Structures are given as C-alpha cells and as structure tokens.
Image (cartoon, rainbow, N blue to C red; front, side, top):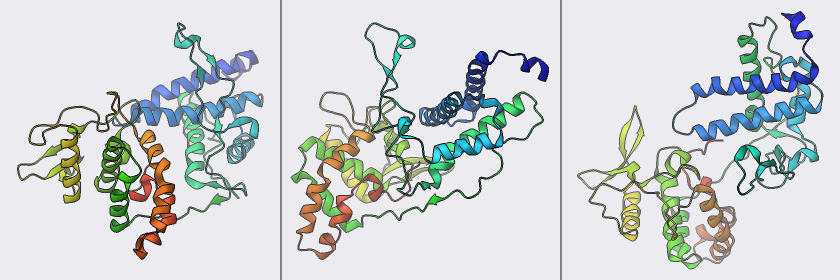
Length: 336
C-alpha cells in the first residue's frame, strides 16, 4: 500500500486531500444536532478550508502532516499573516446573474480570517477560539487515520506546549432596573415598529431559558411565534427541552409578549400562527445580526441619556449601556 501511495503523482495530492475532507464532512454530519445544522456545517467547513489552504500554500499534503506541520499550523492560526485576513465579512463567491452557483468565481477580496478575531495586541488568542480551530484538525486527522486503518499516531493528539491564551474578560450584565430604563428610553431613539421589535428581542434574551440561536433562529431559518404556547391560566410557556418539557416564562415576558402580539394584530387567545417572530414592514423578517445592528445604532444615544440621569444607578451604568449587546441582557451564555 505504501509503495502504491508513493507512486501517486504529487499533482494529485490536492484532489486526494479534498476528497478525504469531503468524506469527513459527510461522516461527521451524522453527529450534528437537528436544531442548527447550518451553524455546525459552517464552523466545520471554515476550519477545514483553512487547513487545506495552509497545506497547499506550503506544498504539503494535509493527510501526511507531521508533528512539526501541526505545530506550525497552530502558530499560523494564532497569528495569521495580513495577506490571509480581511476586515469585515466578505462573500466567498461573486454572484453572477444567469450563471449557476458552480460557475461563480471566487471573490478576490475574500480571505480565510477576519482581522476582528479575538486576538490581542500581544498575539494571544482566546482559548475558545483556539479550541474551535485546532479541534477541527485533531478530529479530521483522527478520522483519516481510522478510515485508512493507518497505524501511525495522530500528530495533533498531544496538547501544544507554551501556547499563551488571552484571559477571558468578565462580561457585564444589565440589572433589572437598568434594563427597565433602557426599555423605557428606547422609544426616544427608534420608530414604533423598530421599538416593538427590539423590546421583544431583549425580553426574549432575558427570560427565555433556551439558547439564543434556538429561540431567535438565523437569516436562513428564522424562528416562529408558535414556539410559544399559552396555558389555560394565561401563562406563556416554551419547550425548554425534551427532558424538561414545557416551562413557564417570566410574568414580565407574559406582559410584553401579550402587548407585542396585539401590536401585530394577533389574538393571544388563539393558537399562534407559524410566522417569523420579528417581521419587517415589507413582509420579510429581521434576524439576530440585523437586530444587533439596530441596537448598536442607538446605544451611544442611550448612554449619553443615561449619563445625564438623576438616578445614580442609571448614570453610573452609562458606559455599560454604551457597550450594550444582547449578551449584556441575557441571563445565560451565548454559544460560541
């Protein structure tokens, strides 16, 4: 077998690597949960394509990495060259009208890394970011070795020594009083529709016991109103998990949600329709990133207003409000 592999033309190595990567993706997809496969696919593909591109750029076969190749790749992930980074999200392909997807050309501006990644000025990387990048290499190489019945060890199996991790920073949290002030102040800076949407967005983030992406969905798969049910006693409940079943939300959630439904001309006494939670005026819907941008657009004005408040609790929280995100409101961690 080794002799036959040695006879393979080096020009075929990229194909062999890509073939095994595709085989790995099809295998690992069976382990992904049904709730958010797009997120897991995207994370997997991003890691694999970095490994492939780095290997091709260095004239290496990914499936033949040695320990020093893995260590060099880990260093590359820690501090990628400027030529591999780009500011802001870029489409990977250039959409061409009338041309099928497989015929689209690669966007020349696209790069594998965003320069807004969690890397400090001293080159340290957040531990969770490193885990996400390196776990992909470890799992792929483990799959390849088992799939080919190879007897050699996984070069990525042993931990890397002397890797400096950026220490996680404590994330602030809006108190109930601060959140109440924000909600009361938002109408001063937003139109009626955007206010109702953002108010509901923050209340869901605060009181739902589920992961935010599960409650709110994403651009490809927006969540719907009918994920909530109304009990006979008037309390709103959500399906927390298969184990926990349907659990009641906060009375504050009930109050705001009822008001929100009436704003949307939906009768809360009837089963909720299967429509997006955050509809736009043009019949499309908002998704979390778009809602986050609305929040960012008004937080400086909110912070300036808070700084001038007569309430010392609110005025002292002005800088916290200036950095307002959904994470400051949520009572649970947002998944990486």
